[in-house]
Amino acid sequence: MQKLFACIISDAGGQQLIEIAKVFSPRLELLENGIVFDVGGLDKLIGSPQKIAAQISEAMALGNISGNLAISTKIESAVLVAENRSGIFIVGDRQLEELPLTHLPLKNDLQKIFDLLGIKNVKELKKIPEKQLIARYGQEFRTILDLVHGKGNRSIVQNIKETCVSWIYELDFAVENLEQLTFTLAHGLDDLFQNLSKQGYSTERIDIDLKLESRADKPYSITISFPSTDKPFWRKLIELRLSEDSPGEAITGIKLTAYFAKPRSAQIGLFSAIKPNPENLLLTVSKIGKLVGSENIGIPVVLNQRIPKPFRLDSKKLPSGRSSSVITRTTIPICFSNFEPELPAEAIIQNRRLIYLKTKKFKGRVVEYGGVWRGTSEWWNAAHWKLDEWDVELESGAVYRLVYREGDWFVTGVYD
Amino acid sequence: MLSLVKKASELQHERTYANEFIEINGLSLLRGSLSEFYGQTSAGKSSFVFSLFAMLTNNGEVCALVDVNNSFDPPSAKSGGIKLNNLLWIKCGGDVEAAFTASDYLIQARSFGAIWINLNDTPQNAIDAIPTASWYRFRNKIKDSPTLLILTTAGPVIGSAKQQSIHLSKTKTIWTGIGKFKLLKEFRVNLESQKPLLTSPIKTLIRKEY
Image 1 (cartoon, one colour):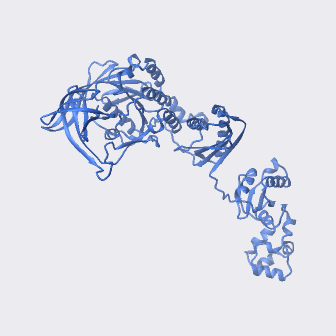
Image 2: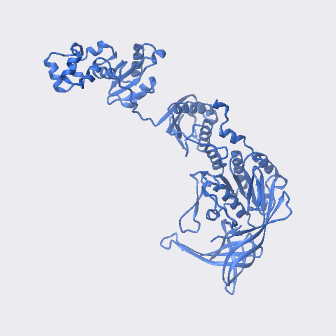
Image 3: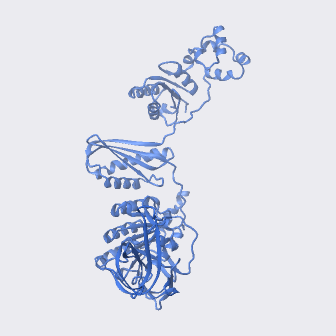
């Protein structure tokens, strides 16, 4: 396969040039004033370098980009010609020979010497024996000679760091029912993930931009905590997200954008601990979240605070499935369960002893009790709290936690 | 040649759990089965499940709690040894129907170590409204999966759909200290397997940790 490079030198923005270059090649290098990209191998697809140049120039015209284009077997030659000559060129000896010496990267004193000697362009420079030039101007001059003889050995330095890939689709007819989009979405995700895998990436975030009939945009963003390119999984997530917050209008276009993330490296052992795979877990959590409210599903977190209920539910996190040192207990610890809401109670005290407890759910004579446990904190602000607690055993055998707070009795939970 | 070797994920999927038991405090609980723990208030049902969850979550298994009445107390679970990062907590706010649909989704996922439907303190009329067919459906869905489906209630509710049924009864509450200064120390509990029927109950201690 013949090496072939195209160089566009233009005042257009880098992004515009990248978009044009990407149509022809994934290997591209952004220059200060243009772009150079690999068009080797396109001869089978498009044809001769002239045809390739014609297609690139057509793409430039479509994108309203004006500039110089040069195609050469060497990057250095393509860049040199495109930087110094306006128009479209397939670089050969003639194009290089016509270049004035002022366009070569020569030092000022050298330029003056060649000027005094009457050497005006590359063609005249090439007439002087190479050995004599190197003897006079040193080995550094070899790079200039390589340049004028088209002998460069530079390769593309891919300096464009992309962060995402996109897929855009304009619908022929406006669609109101989201279910009708299922196949279109599946097709879009297919395309998106193919592009991702070509570049060796996975994704943790997909943005969905719906174009509505009223020409407004409805954006959605789905971020997960692990990289995945599992199409059915993403499709279900998108469907769940759209059904939770429907656009409320007919849809005329879709744009999907997947952001790059390093692919997941997972080691699954036959005898590894039993846990759902992340995709399965997230889908299950999303489905249940839709049912009970997303704020009611997550992992429990114990807070390091002095408050009556020092815990919360973290709905942003999912169970990790990491093991720790196995605990070996000979006895089972007593578990406490809360009453939500806590039960207002009536406590009867005789001779400074609790003798009877009554709530709307249970009542009974107090057989034994332990306490009082006094708790108070945040006396410095409005969230101030103060309570007295007892562990109370009733004649039924049940052991409850009784609380006295601001003149009222409550049963807050049970030991079970 | 590698194509001839099955992936570990496929082998895991094909693995059967028909005869795998979890040994806990003298009881053997079968994976892929529906088990019921019942007993009166303070009989130690939740403590027993906490103990089971502590073992599984520390082993790296992900367990789920369908908390029908929002009664779960994470500090108590933490002190009971449960690794909270491996526990999925679902608060149902008293909605038994939502709890059952959520349980259905969890069972469909087929890869939780254990799922606990906590029906403690659920009104009897709500429990009576649960169709028996639901339990049979759960039983069928859970088989051949590694998941242990556990239910805790005051009385037996599953009927003949259950594969294991444990009745817990507290024989004594032990307090330490003298006079007014008492501390709850432990519950003495009998575990009786009603299905399969075992001849003698297992006596166990459930201890309060300070």
